[in-house]
Image (cartoon, rainbow, N blue to C red; front, side, top):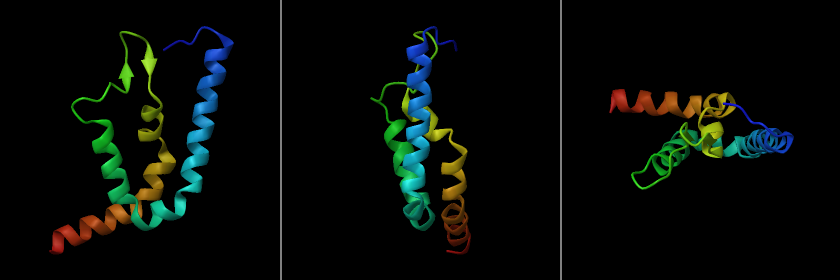
Length: 91
């Protein structure tokens, strides 16, 4: 996907930086309760009436796409995801 103007590229970099900052601020909560938070967020994004997070026809990408695909979010939610899977297998 190409962003033609300098302003579009700067806005995209700004959104990515703010998402990283928001994830770092929320990191204590994500380490403690990351699995339920992430599941609710994904349900909210992929609900039926929600707009697409990646629209190739229009050439638009939602900020939600960068949140879902951010490796730091996945890494911070991993401990509670593993714990939830352990509980589901045993119970």
